[in-house]
Length: 531
Ligand code: TEU
Ligand code: CA
Image (cartoon, rainbow, N blue to C red; front, side, top):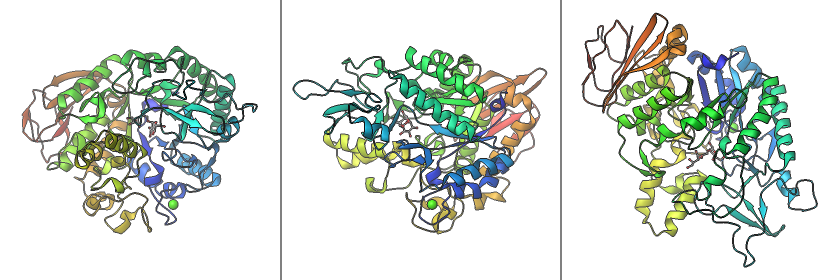
């Protein structure tokens, strides 16, 4: 049953959602206490960020035990209670599945240092050159090379991310068996499926040297290869027994590759990246001026080329959409236009925590206030390149993943209703103004708008299942139709601070301005839905 075609999925970043015990870190009991918020929004499933045991080098994307809950997030009983309590509210739980790499604290890695152990080939180990040089010239996602020397084994191991995240070797069939058992473990507990971390990088065809590239030298040796498709088919056999849902994070995929990854016996959906690249030159650290048309173009291409999309404008790796694509002056209106875009395209919308109240990028002033391992390693790299501190900060502050990771702003009080203690990452000072409590009773708020459009999506099948037809696309305006049989809706969005004309007609169903009729002129950052 394709329940996920009718659902809105909500992403929780556990560290920053709700703290229940005053240690400043969000946790599972905290999430349980906020399930009513999710129910009010009408979400059908939660993508729960990693809560497995982990040393936390990359906030849980470095798993040291796949069958245990990290004590900072709670216990296995808490997790079971979350699944049950969510279930009572009609909300499914999706786990984050991180199987490209494990923490170097995982016992597979620790025991694998001994070449005679059964875990000796669970990772990519290599001697390197006779002169002690690295095994190859590949570079990693967090900048710099991707090999670390292990003095105990006297070999290098591959890590495409941090050195605390060692890549698993799928040439060893035992690794795939382990992963299948992990899937069964969680599916038996009642989770409905998985969000699969960097799923198109699993298979490395060889460890050969590679042609130098400005970013990610070596990529062609592991990006979306046939070996990865084989792994996915093999995992699908297990998933199918449980009718489990999967959405894979597929870095740098083309629509054609996405179609292949979503064949009936592979993944259900993939997260594309193309629309997230519309305000950057090649790499995320080189920002260019955002032109709405480039966002529309990317979205349009994916609407046309895939029968069904995983829709998102935010997640825990991306800056906040209202800061990135919206307007400071028209904060409320632009957050609403972005919400309308997310909730009216064809596909499954993934809403990231805080987006529904228009949370913005952080207001930090110094690198020391950041926790993100990626920001820290990029800062090191830029320091080595002799970039002055002010320029480094300019680059990092706008791109840091911590922009999306500051604690959820429940109230305007100290601690933002998130914690009674000292938060693990600073709370944005704008929480006095931007918080859920302030928006709850206000029918014009960002929150009310999200709630209303989510309900409209449930009410109108054409908004969920209807065809997508573009009607207008200019530098600032995007308009389209969603049609199912003889029922259809028209959406028109103004992505600018200037009024804009758009030739669409119909009875006004929704607007984020107070109006009763629509006559071809959109106000600044206005969204309208017409019948
Ligand atoms: O992210 C993978 C990824 O390629 C990027 O989003 C990455 O975080 C960075 O922005 C590249 O420039 C996934 C997770 O979502 C991320 O949080 C993890 O750090 C990463 O995998 C490693 O597990
Ligand atoms: Ca806590």
